[in-house]
Length: 592
Ligand SMILES: Nc1ncnc2c1ncn2[C@@H]1O[C@H](COP(=O)(O)OP(=O)(O)OP(=O)(O)O)[C@@H](O)[C@H]1O
Image: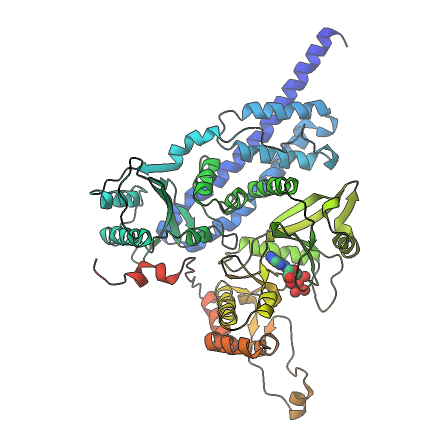
């Protein structure tokens, strides 16, 4: 090729790469605009008391990412005929894309979107660093300069502390009035004082930083911020509600780290937060909650794909700094799932088996549908959220041979060996917990009572949230680091409203009862709560604890009444913080 021809061809491929990069970025910008519109609608729903719309928005939003990737892929197939594009154009498209991201406010999300589109178009062998973003190319550090827009800063003085707190609450420009603003301010200050034990001397750097957008979920708008004073760096969360008369009130002031951390637990529904620069929001939250990974924070903000990207990077970073092996998770093996873990990393990996033995009546498609159902549902702090991954490549020498054998034998269609790596075609990843059966086997006395009490509360709260777990055995529940019972086996869950809760009918003849066989038919979705105790509460101490707190769960009435309330559209409050932190309980009715 002559010099001139070469220049023309380079210019042509540069032009094409730029158009390709622009088309992908257009797809992302459209995605983020629609995503942001959802978050912006949250304030209106909150003020209108429309919890239903709030929940539907969170649910709808989950599908947005894949829809926009589909559209972008379609456009590229139509306009660019990628099968004819030389590799060089893809490599240049990546460089052009980076140049388009200068001054972009969501560059890390846009890079992930680029990867999603490219991975759909290119074959897996092409996923090398020249074409996709394995590591972030555009730093989000400098856009943290946008932080001032992400939070507001207040400089309190001792005399004006009340005024400052009042201003924090009113600066959100809610259109609804407060029920009693002065009272709420006094309660907040009382709670702060109780937490710290004294009022510290104001330091030169005294300030209160408050995130500019509330965090909306269900009926609540959380105001999140931090108090800085000398060495003190105290995060806080103020859950704000609307009463039936359309007035606002602050329900509690949370200063305890674990209480705030718990709001961001993956076992709860995602938030709606209006964010221009999400990396700055995540940065702020990560500063105040360092034990909450960026992967979890992005996920909780509704940016699940970014959460997954961060998780993947965190996992591979961890693998470089550890030497233990992936092994089968402790506990009773599942009939549906192969579950494995890396002991030094607090997550489990779950692969659906190819053949699921009876009496299970599920297949891969149904199991995936149930996991999707949980993702979209308000998990009310009682169901683990999971990240779904395809084609995960793990280093073979870090996998226990017994695990590899189990995968190759029980899930051959999901498993592939590729040189030094093993590739798992589809898996779920979720937080590791201590299975409840293991904990109960090792425990006695007060611990058993406490665990059984929380287990019953989990069943109760799931029911109120319209979830019937199906299989309630202890092995299907785990206990979190914070000591909370959470459900994680979804293949038999049903909506409460699809279940038929019945009393066991009297036997037709005495022989039936003596035979030990059930004489009443067990049609699908018929549930007999009087049976639960027989297979669950096999130990006297467990039975005693369960009967002390939850005897009503063994009657059909509890389940029928709960189902009826759901049918009437009653949405119950789930407070993701202890009752005794609520102002109505703590200071209720007291003048201050
Ligand atoms: N999040 C988790 N943390 C710790 N261990 C877990 C977790 N999820 C699953 N396990 C372990 O793996 C086992 C099987 O998991 P799971 O119950 O999800 O599979 P399954 O095949 O659906 O089970 P089943 O046969 O009861 O339907 C559990 O009994 C538990 O020991």
